[in-house]
Image 1 (spheres, rainbow, N blue to C red):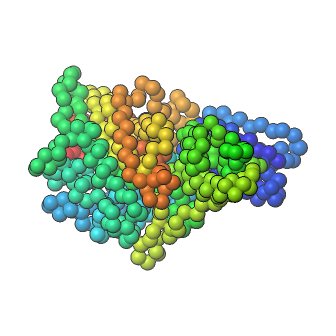
Image 2 (tube, one colour):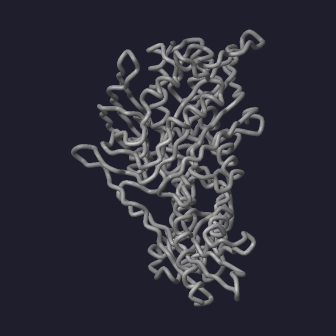
Image 3 (tube, helix red, strand yellow):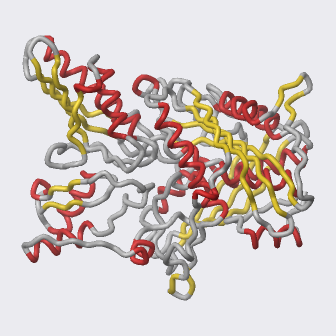
Length: 531
């Protein structure tokens, strides 16, 4: 049976379909066309098994096309979470303790909830040196649609809380938010809340300072100075600026043995005339196929025009290359392709032609949290990002107008700077949707937001006038050519930076998303969290 479907992990889809139909995996072929817009929503099964079962039973081609309403109902949602936090710091701004309680709505099945909450646990105390930490997380079953993977996989929720706490602490201590962060950010060799240091190549200080400087902060002998808001008209409109910093894992975590398979075939006579790369990566709009070709060309020392791909098809790529998720594909596929290319070149040089070699890259091992101490090494690589947001708030209507976003993202090495900028700009706009308009509502078993007229997303009119990408290249020693994963990073810090900017403009904190005009206006009229 052959299934042509939009997905994120061909090998996993193949094996789940085979298991459901009680077939050997080699009797199931999965092909992914290049369809954009996955963001975790295609990691979980949707139509694959039903489609395969119908075709197998009917012995004829079967096609399923979901309507918009069916798609909104059938796909998983980002985990709604509530937090209760208490942080402590000395008067000079040194963090000393954090206590965080998290409750997440896993929906009816909670099938990825534990994994999502692992990321939330890591990120909810921020990328800071914190000697005393207590985090309790609970995933609960509800009658809501299942919650699952969505860009950031628990990190946006955790980072929102951590950066809200940092920005509130900065105000309470009378410190600049950049100054407070630089005093506490994790550095090379610093111990995390999990009791272990981050992997080498920590660049939190650099992304923070690069972002702050690009946004207009000034470094003075007495400390950092935030840019003053410019005068604007009409009088009801106020302007503010805010900042947030975040980190997130690259790849799968908590003891899962990360791996990626690739095969390289070299053909020609005196020189390599054609190189074919076989790999299971899906291209879901981020340009992964372009980047894989670029990395293969570099590994082989040939022109890009000589590199061909055979991808997204279990018939040509029977090994698992893993999911196109967790900001992992450039990191993992790059290491796999580089290994396969090196082995193929050895055979080519010994005149064993056509030269064919396979390679499976195994990432460094990780561990789950120790159930007694909470310590562990949950991740083998991280991405680092900082964002500043400038906003105008209409105090008469509650409307927000995001004027400018500055995003400093450490990508290790920008294999394709244009695609990096595309990821940053897309992540910013998508995060703006999560922060300001997107709100999935189910009441009494009925969906109230089952179409794009009720479930709102940003349009071109909502895009900030300026999105400034600051590409930081601090090599990851474990990444291919120093590459880091970065697909999720630009999404993560925007919401807390936006809330800080609104507070800077109005003196009012907002602890709940989305920041709709009704919610903002209500908070301005009756502030529950004034400065």
